[in-house]
Length: 255
Image (cartoon, rainbow, N blue to C red):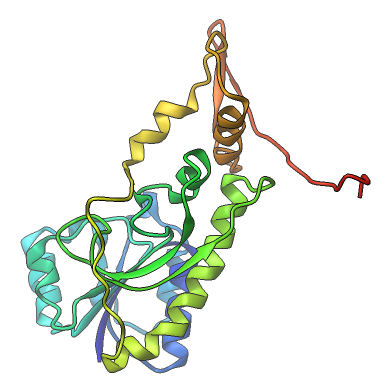
């Protein structure tokens, strides 16, 4: 099977390591541009792929990149925490489609920052393997695994939970995908939630003169606690005061 791998971040690195250990045929690699790269060096070094077959994800809609990938005759695309929306024409290049690994329990938290919104909106958290269609995270589901959110979780700790479950879920289902024996369950487009990148800007600023339900305010601050990112803040005159939270638990006996 001729695989075009599109990925970013630690999860993509772990997945491509897994694939290379299986001696899978990765015929092309698409990574993020330099200013958006996470673990790109490790991802590239995990393969022996020719530099001419490494593409910038921000150029996928350009004719030259499209034609070069088309010439590789890929059978399947793998999108692992890949941050670019692909066109219908691009999807059609792959006779076995494009499989996406999304760190949310679809149909909840389509789009960006699912670790944040699972906490803020108290929606189900988890990981989903699904096929890409013309929508955003709306394609047929292959497999899902729910991840428990506890009151001591922050945006950072939940993100790390989702990372490890993502790698596990992919490795569990890849053999079935490779054989063409994977489940395909349609999503309900009438349910679920979606968030864009800019939606976090609507919750980051805490208004000192507004009344909040304590539960909601704690959820916002802990969801946005993810060093080194600045997170939630309030204004003191012309100064922004940033906040992070530390949570720990003990039982009624103080243990």
